[in-house]
Image (tube, rainbow, N blue to C red):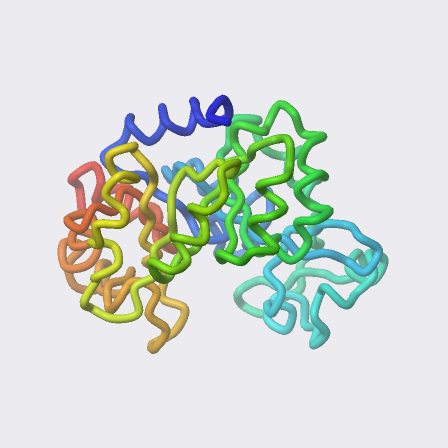
Length: 278
């Protein structure tokens, strides 16, 4: 099961902590969840790039975070309700609201623009895992760089447990009950956790239930992105505090709690912080 983990473990031990960029680098004419966004993220210093998967009614997998249609495509319908032809007809809009010549990419099209050694944290694909996980099998040269992410639910765990290729798995976890459910499976290749903390007690990340995973060198990721002013992914700690006040008040506090990977929207500044230059 661990044969797919070697390169990932090498990366993890080679850095003070890992940097994961949310939807790739985007701004100006560079649109999130595109090959350009991934490649620019790597230039900025990210170690892992998070991407999102949607599916057309024809069964094609596209790299797009559903719910972003009004903002990025000027489309009110959810992308998962559109045919491949309908998706292909949509043009992206940039952050100034100007239409571009760029279109939503299929997953395999995005891969064609990336080096084979890019680590991808594949988000929001879980509703289609019955087909998406076998679909990944064809990209043999990239198996060591795919990391699947999902909430902990029986239907998702069953698919991973039964699939012959043991892709790296990185669940979103909220409590010890979910951890116990995960531990009831013997054939899932868990390499880490995205730990959600709803308040500033931070009791879960410091719970003893994680001790053996920390000893085994697992990834513990704190999500520092600020979706809005109210949503708490890791208590009150997030990018906003780090970049407007002091990184030690946010990113630094995460690291003190045993976090060894931070997901951010500000990879260049987090990269400087890791190097001691911010």
